Image (cartoon, rainbow, N blue to C red):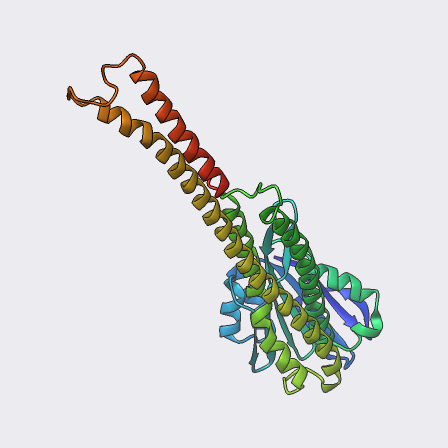
Length: 327
């Protein structure tokens, strides 16, 4: 569905339009005007009128109608097509939620298509309507503002992930040994969230590099410094994502090592107790054999003597294992 359609002239909202043909004609009648159409999860029928009015390429239309596109930028005759993946981080659930935002810019028009629960386009429109000095730069200013908003959100999410990672690290390396084997699942789930973060930030590097180069149609070379700033922020987000992934790998390895050490400690304890139980079992087994000529067998103090030997042997083993740290 079309959530907003407006004509902007000289950086100000001139009118809200209902007819796309009339809006585009009014925008192209002035050099300092353009029309901005915002759509949310459009159907093929809803998008058909927009595609035909702005002469969008069929391949770009196909991508715009199907979600789950990776971040990219493609140049078609008459339009520049860019796909971004805005992210949101739920701190309580420790989950990264992904949405999609597609941007078409061309001669006198901007078309944004969103999938998922993302308010990026609406927030950018509201913010730019309050800064006409930026909006008057035309469609490329809208593309810059959207890229800037998406990438700045990446940095905020990276900071939130870093805080949660530090808390997870404290649990793994708790001095009281409270880290349980179940933490491996928590670490792996967190690693999946970082992977989702990197899937959004990594592929966006190449499109921004092309925008910085200034050799992209519909992008004024004067916009290069703005996109360079966005690319710098994206590089920081990518570095943060790589750092989080490496730290999580190290934390997972350390946790599994701790689990292995605890299991070895348990095996040593089990072996020590088994050894202490084996000595009296051996002696009792020998005296349980049907022989007449056994030491102390028919003496009054024979039974207490054998039991005492058992106790002394078990005590000696206990002290030995205790001194070596097995118990």
